[in-house]
Length: 73
Image (tube, rainbow, N blue to C red):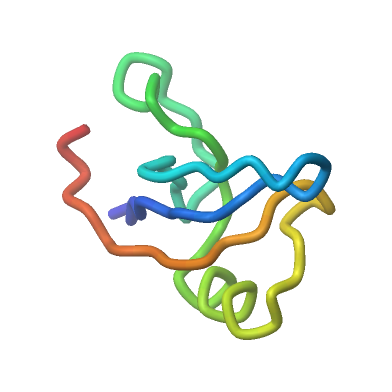
């Protein structure tokens, strides 16, 4: 069962903050179910590591916090 997370953070290029962006831990895209997913293939361990290191994901955005959400998007 895939896991979904809401993340908060900011974009590297202009420091614009975002909140509530949805990421999914698998790369499986189900158009009818995942229309609100911002990014695919980011596991909880990946998220924790990105927060700890403050390293930009894909070189574009930094995650500052997250929470797991139900898959009923």
